Image 1: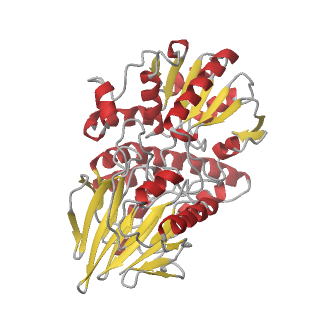
Image 2: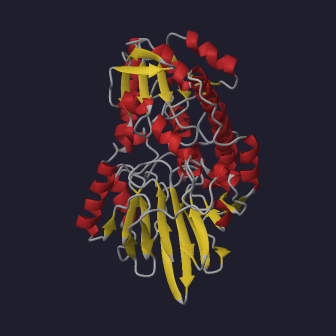
Image 3: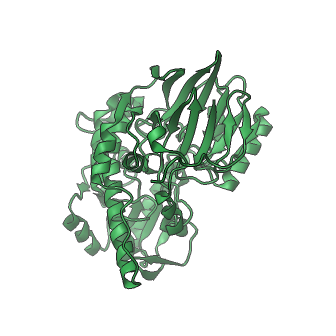
Length: 479
C-alpha cells in the first residue's frame, strides 16, 4: 500500500500520483507539463508505469495541468474508468479537444522547423480520436457520495473551491485489515470568491498530499482586489488604450465577467466594450450556467435565468477567427479577454502582439504563470518579449492581480489544513521550490506537522506512513 509522486513534485504542472494497493494501481490526475519548450517536450516521454496495468483513474478537476495527458494515457493502452465530478466531465469535453488541436498545431510548427534542418517530422501528442476515446471512459460522480472503486478502495469527492467541479479526493484504503484515509487536496481555491463555493473542511486523514502553489505568499483581500481592478479600469480609460487580459477559459474568465456585471455602475463599465475572444471560454461559460447547483449563495441571488452573472450589456462573444482578427484594428476602449491563460498560445498572442508595445495599453495578469511562459516574463517585467518569433519591447503597463487567482494563498492553505484533527503527516506537491519550502515551514511552526517535500519518484509507504525515496516505477513496456 503506497503512493508514488510522478508529476508536479517541485513544480506546478503535470500533476500525477500513482497509488498501489492489493496488487492494483490507481492514478490520481494525469496532467500536461506546461512551461518552456524543454518542459513541454517531457510530455511525450514514456509514463513511469505501464498504462495497460492501471485499474482506475481519478481526476480532481478539468484544468489541463491535471487532465491534459489523459488522452495520451488512453492512446498508450489504458482502457479503464476515469472517475470525476460530473461538472469536470463536462468541462473536459471542452478543454481536451482544444488541447488536441494545440498539440496538432505545435507538431506542425515543429515539423516545419525540423524539415528546414533535414530532420524527420514529429507526431502530435494525441489527436481528436484519442480524446473521443478518453471521454467515453469517464464516469460521473457527485460531491460527498461514497463510491466503491476497487476491492479495498472507496472514494469520496469534496468541494475544493478552485473551479466548477474541482474536488479534493478522499480515498479509504483497506489492506490486510489495516485501513488508511488518504486525502489528495487537488487544487484548492480561495475563500469568498465569485460563483463557486468555498473549499470544504475535511477533518480526518492518515496521510495528506497537498498543493503549495502559493505557499509562500498571500493574495490581496477580496476588497483590495476589487479596488485594484477599479483603479486599473480608471487608469486605462484615462490612457485611452486597450486592456488585454490573458485568462484561463475555465474559472478566471467567468469570475471576470461576473465582476464586470456586478460592478457595472461603480466601475464605469459603460465606457468599455468587453470582448470574450475564446470559443472554449464561451462553451465553458455555458456549463457554468447549467450547473447552478454548484454556485455560491451570492451568485444564485444575482444571476438571471439565462446566465450565472448579472447583466453585462456591452459583452461581445467572438467565436470565429474573423471576429477575433477584427479586434486587431481596435485602438482604444476595448477589454479583450482571451486565452491561453499563461500566454503560451492561442488568440491572446495576437492581441499582445498588437498592444504590448503601446504605452497607452494595459495588460492584466489574473492567474498563475509557470516558469518559461510568456506570461511569466510579463509578470517579471522583462523589457523585451518574443511573440511569433518577433522581438517586442514591453511598453504597455503590466498589472498582476493576485487576488483573482483560482489558488488559495498561504493563509488560506493554512486555514484549510487547520480543519484536520489531529494534524496529518503531509507531502507537499504542485509548487515551485521556494513556495513549497515556505508552506512547509509554516505547517511545522503552526501545527507541528511532519512535512515532506518529495522529489519526482519519491513516495509514501501507507502502512508505516513514512516517506519512500527512489526512482519512479519502470514502465513495463515502451509507448
